Length: 110
Image (cartoon, rainbow, N blue to C red; front, side, top):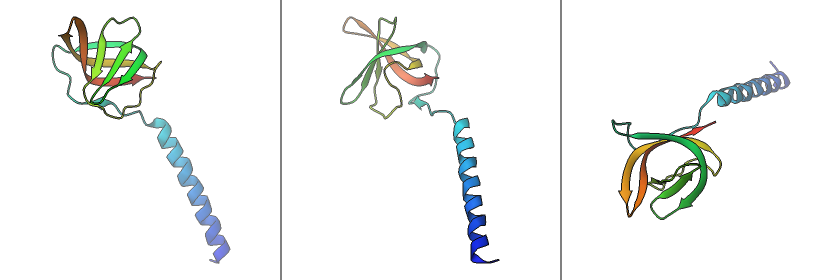
C-alpha cells in the first residue's frame, strides 16, 4: 500500500468514527442530579421553573403554580434553566412561616 491509499483509508475510518459518535450522542440522556436515594415520605412535584436564585451554599428554585420554595442544599453544577420543566423529589420542611422543599433529586423533562 502506498502512502496515498493509506491516508484515504484513515480519512474514511475517521469520518465513520465521527458519524458513530454522533449517533451515540443522540441516544444519551442527560445525567440526573441526586444527593440521596428516594425514600418513603418524599414528595414529588413537577412543573416549570419560574426563577432560579444562586446563594453561597445553595440554589433556590420557584416553580409555576407552586407556593413553596425549593432548595438545593449543595451548590452543584446542574443543567437547568428558567423555563425548563422538571420533576423534583424532596422532603417538606416548615422554615420561618414558609414551606420549603429540600431537594433529594431533580430530573429535567424534555
